[in-house]
Amino acid sequence: MARPSLKRYALLSIVAALATIALKGVAWWLTGSVGLLSDAAESLVNLAGALMALAMLTLAEQPADDNHAFGHGKAEYFSSAFEGFLIVVAAVAISYSAVDRLIHPRPLEALGLGLGFSAVASVINYLTARVLMTVGRQHHSITLEADAHHLMTDVWTSVGVIVGVGLAGASGWQWLVPLIAVAVAVNILGTGWRLLQRSADGLMDAALPEERRVEIAAVLEDYRRQGLEFHALRTRQAGRRPFVSVNVLVPGQWTVQRGHDWLERIEESIRQAVPGSHVTTHLEPLEDPASQSDQDLDRQEDGG
Image (cartoon, rainbow, N blue to C red):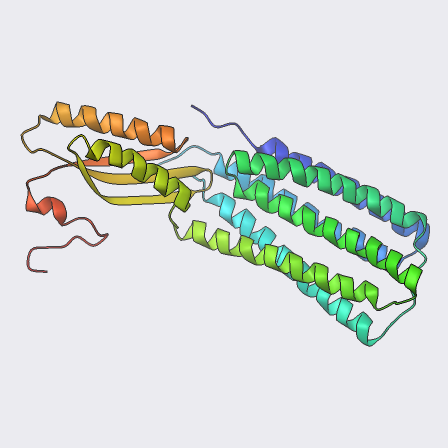
């Protein structure tokens, strides 16, 4: 069954980025605030992330070909790594600016109506991020999840500004603004770092999450009780598609047809446990010692 295209959600992110750039641009025009101008410029980074997401989703949805027999799903990790990098850079930039404000305090800018426009832009980013995160998790798309996290960094930054300005204005403690900014930076730095880790794991063929592997093990255990054995179970996630391979050991006197029929049942059971997975099985005779030599990636030769 064909997988639904997710490109329209990347287009939604692009529209949201353009809308927030316009709103924050108006906020800067009304106030002349350098801070709001910087905020509008940062939204250009959101637009770059959304464009990258659209490009990589378009590539990931291309069918398998002679040069990419396993499909193009891993293209999603380039997008998520890019978004993770942008988030880390944003966290460092916020921290640098906040520390500078702590060392060299400056009077608060009168943001007035401009802050309201910025708040509306944050609401747009928040709602878009919720949609992207929900769909990303539903379809196992790290690209949409990463874009959602990137939008949320913008939301947290704006919330930090609003809260910081409000508290500082009420208390007169101007150091609250940069202090809250540092807290926001630490929070989004962790988000960016985790995205980079997940992207690296995907590119290095990390195994499926433990809960998925437990489900596969439960399926195989059901068939063990029927006299079959298994080894060399390997799993990986390539973008939205999980891959599972396993060697199935059956009595040597079975016919090829009988063994094949059992493999078809096993593959279907695994696909039901892990929807959307590509399952590969290999049939081997239980009694043949050679069947035990390929449990590792490097085949164990006799006497080796």
